Image (cartoon, rainbow, N blue to C red; front, side):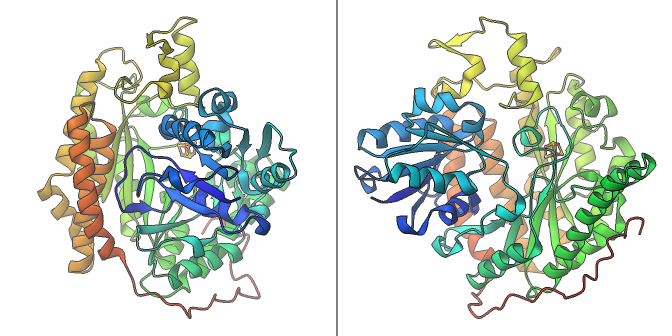
Length: 515
Ligand code: SF4
C-alpha cells in the first residue's frame, strides 16, 4: 500500500515557478509507517495513472480552479481500487461535492497538518471517518515541509509559509474566511530551518507564501491603544516583534538569497518595517492595489488602501526601500468606466512598480462577492448542460463560460478586451526593458525580462483568453520560456550550510511601535 499526493492541473508547463507547498507539508504529515509518499505535481507533467495500484491511498488537494481535473483524477483512481481522500480550500467549502463528483472515500476540511495523518491511520485499521474537520491548526503544530522529496531541477522558486490568516476582510477574497482573521505566525526556528534546507538544495529565491506578511499595522496598534485594550496591544506588539526577529534572522542567511512575499499597502507607512525588509533581502512583494479610485476600493471593502497620487507615493516608498512591487489590480468593479483601464495602466507605469497583474472581478467561491452574485441569480440560475452557472467549475473547460461579475455598463467581452489591452501594453518589450533597469546586473536584467514574459504568458494568456488556440500557444511559449528562466534562478547547492543559531536575547524591542 503506497501513499500518493496529487496536485491536479489541466496545463503542464514542464517547469513551474513556485513549489506547491501543500504537497511537501502533507508529505511531512504522513506518518512514518506509511513510508515516503509519491508526489505528483501536474503543473509539471500529467499523472501516470499506472503508478497507482489497488489498495493505494491517494490525497488530492483542490482549489476551485483545478477542482474539475481533481474530480476526474478521483474517479480514475477509484476505478483502479485506490482509497481516495480530498482536501484543499475547495473541499473545505464544498465537502459533499468531492463525494458526488470525485468518488471520494473521505474528505478533510481545513488544515491537513494533523487530520491527514489521522485519516491514514484510521483507514489502515478500517475505521476511516467520512469527514475530517482539520480546522485551523495552531502555528506551533504546522509541519516542516519535506523538501528532501523535492526535485529541485523542476522549480524556479521554493515556498515557505511564515503566517496563515489575514485580519482584513476584502469582498473578493476567501483567505480571511478559510484561514481566519487571527494571524497564526510560525516561530522563526522552523521557518529558518526550512529555508536553510532549501538553500542547501540550490534554491536562492524563496517565496514567503503568506496570506499577509504584515498582519499587524501601526494603525492597528494605535487603535488598540486608543481603546485602552491592553491585552490586545500586548498581543499585537508581540506579533510585530516576532516579524522583526524573523527578518533579522533572514538577514543572516547567505548573501545572494532573495525573498518574495505578499503584503498590504499599509506597510509603506512603516519605514522601520520596510528597512527591516530591505536588510532581510525581501526584495519583492505582491501588493493588492485592486483599484486606483476611492470608490473602487470602497466597493471591495478595501478602503484601508490609498488612491490617486497618494497611492503612487506609497508604491514608490516600497521601491525606495529596495522592495520591488508586483501590483495586483482588479478590473470590472461596479465603479469602473471605460477610461478606468487607461487610468490604471498609466498609474501602474508611473508608480515605478516592477510587475503587475490585471485580473477581472470574478465570483470566487467562499467570498462575499460570490454569495451576493449567487443570491442575485435566484433559485433558477442559467445552466450549461444542466449545471447551474453558480457551480461553473463543474462545467467542462471547453463549454465553461468565463465567470466575470456582471457590470452595470460594460459587457464581459468589452472588459476582457480592455483588460487584455492593458496586459499587452504593460508587458510590451520596450516597457519591460525600461523597468528592468531597476536590477543590478545584466544577468538579473535578463531574469527580469524572462520572468516578465513568462508571467504574461502564464497568467494573462491562459487566464483571460477564451479562445483555446490562443491558450494552447501561450502554454507552449510558457514551457519554452520557463526552461530558460529556471537556469537564471539556479544557484550552486550548499549542502554543508548550517542553520544560524537564534539570538539568545531578542534584539527586537517588542515595544518598538512608532519608530
Ligand atoms: S485580499 Fe489580501 S488583504 Fe484582503 S483579505 Fe485577502 S489576503 Fe487579506
